[in-house]
Figure 1 (tube, rainbow, N blue to C red):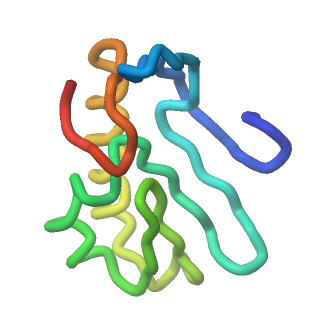
Figure 2 (tube, rainbow, N blue to C red):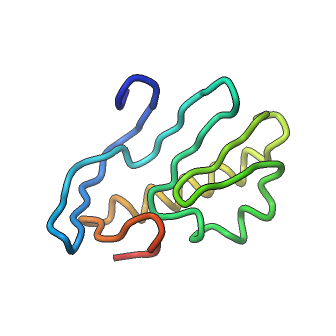
Length: 103
């Protein structure tokens, strides 16, 4: 558990050009009443092609909101999380979600 409601797997270390650094879950979700939130810390923009095939959702800069998991293509969701996890854990991550991409 990361905080009170986020279920996270693995960890990655981030360090921004400003000097701020820390650790966060490399893959995470939060089952909330309004929607299940899936966190993609490398940025939702890195997964545009997959998002088009995901099914009904809304998105922020670093997260996807799914009101009903049974409406989503879980294979597509798995691929997005897998790619994000690989990007975040290959080395110290130096970008914010809105910047996205590999280091």
